[in-house]
Length: 169
Image 1 (cartoon, rainbow, N blue to C red):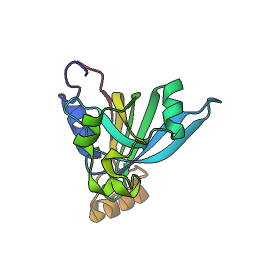
Image 2: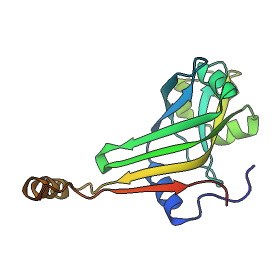
Image 3: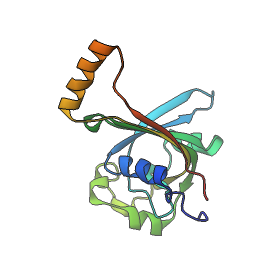
């Protein structure tokens, strides 16, 4: 358990709101050779502390990679709303049955046919430390306006980019 929530300030609230409905995050870890590897992970809601959770098979390569180097990056993309988020933090493997039960949903049977009692289930908890988001206008008319403005003035449309400290406060 981490002390205090790192979701309380405005930038963090916006970042977590932007990723709430994104179903898949790309998780990047370093393999044994130091090469970066990314894989899609089914997104769960952040908990009350702002930690991000993912179901995984305990013997998956990602669990070994986290065991060697627990620094990870999560990339979220919502192109329909022109929202993009990057979160870096420290990951840990959790095998706690109560946590698995609390976070389980029946749709996970696709990957864990034995259900929540499948002995291969583990969780990855990511404790975010830093994040960045890019938030652009998403209406088609605004995109059209931005295209015309760029063509006429040479200025690109405005995108809100913000770095957010997600470390515990």
